[in-house]
Amino acid sequence: MSSLWKLPAAFVSCLALMGCSRTPPKAPQRGQVQPQAARALATRPEYLGVERCYNAWDDNENGRLDEGCSVPQAAVSVMLAWSDEEADLDLIVADPTGEIATPQAPTKSGLATLADCPDDEGCGSQSYEIALVEEDTYAGGRYQVQVLARKFAPGSAPLVAQLGIVTPEGTCAYQLEFFDLGQSVALDFVVAEPTQIE
Picture 1 (cartoon, rainbow, N blue to C red):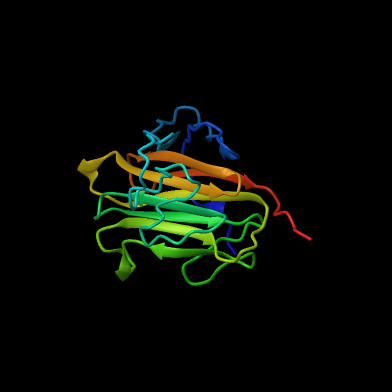
Picture 2 (cartoon, rainbow, N blue to C red):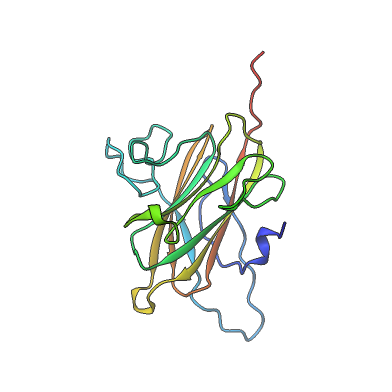
């Protein structure tokens, strides 16, 4: 399986929250003009008390993303959401072994990509992608996440998206901003090994 990090990496500025961390940016070469970089800002969504659908945030602070909105739930999940129906973002998630989940096949550890919008017919006007561990058991270790901007109208920059991560330890929320096609944001998070109950 190809490595997650072969895709172009862009600057990420985010704070470490609940095991989520940032990937350091690559330094520009001497004399090279640095384009405006994509970025991820660690965000704590405003507590509303009710869950809003398809925003990839834990609005009611119960450790789940968009529950009650036809979004599957799991102990480990990553959800990406954006409002521009014409835009196309790709969510790429690798499990602790480095294997990348695809819509066609889950990884050996059970990590699967369940939605690929806007390509999936079931997306409707809701633009989101989600990767999660479908089984009750999940692999502990470092998961790698990359979000790639494939398509959006040039005049609509920045394209803003939300990224939510659920682990047994809690949730993380990021607001992503993309300024050019082909930009990507990369980050990782750590999941503790599951506890075996005897």
